[in-house]
Length: 98
Image (cartoon, rainbow, N blue to C red):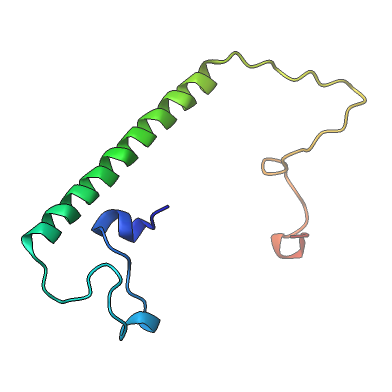
């Protein structure tokens, strides 16, 4: 599992507690061409994987939305929750229960 920062930038975010410690990915400050290429490939791989996961999620959502839904049958005796947003209330808002 990657953090959003690591997904976007290819390395873990540095927090104040770890500022003096060496970076676990690179122990030296020099970045060679090999490291840059592997970082770019890793970021590209993460973006492709995320794109594939989003496409699969869209397919699943489409399948869920295509299923026929059955309307609920409410009888006279049934208890239901009411939304009082559109019902006029004589009590001022600051006195109503939260």
